[in-house]
Image 1 (cartoon, rainbow, N blue to C red):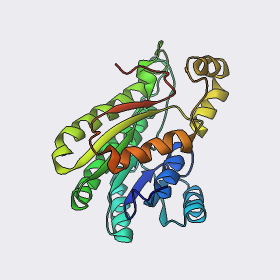
Image 2: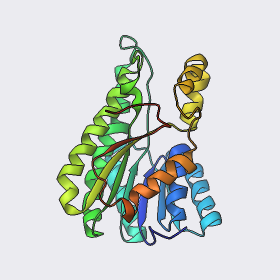
Image 3: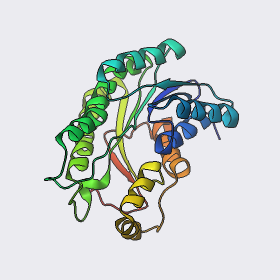
Length: 255
């Protein structure tokens, strides 16, 4: 594996497990220094320890609640203070509410907006000057195919949060592309703790959902999702900007 990201620094939210952790491993494998952010410090520390063990890589674990918008300034500042730069931002942390519109909690919706599009926007704003100073970089935002479901009943609130992230990503791609910053959105289907919890909560629906995946399997957080993100952040993908890309074995059509 070539060190295509050698010397670069990646800040990843929700990196203590699941998709965020898988992305952290794949970026570290290519030489990136990882700042693993999450609400549970021990999980983020475990991610960094595994990076050191597997790749002899460098990293920093930070405990942070992304919903605390005022605290995000410190998060980015600590990253730059530790490593001197920031090249990659991955907005992965998520809060999900699956409920009908009549049953949806406004408080939970507001929480989802803070963790989702509001925190995503604020972290992009904070990261942008550092990405410019680094000569350009990549922002990877995570969305969902929920808005493209054949039946979006019970998924309207969750889909709304994720579609807002896609809109922000497209705007960033246009506004910051001339500065050398590429912003792309991925819509992953991965065997993450969140998906496992959903499958436990709605087993029949989950089983039916997997049957709609042409490849007949759910993706691996590192080998399927992380590896793609690593390629997307690499020089080989230097002309890819403003795209929403489903990494889901062909389950959804974004056209």
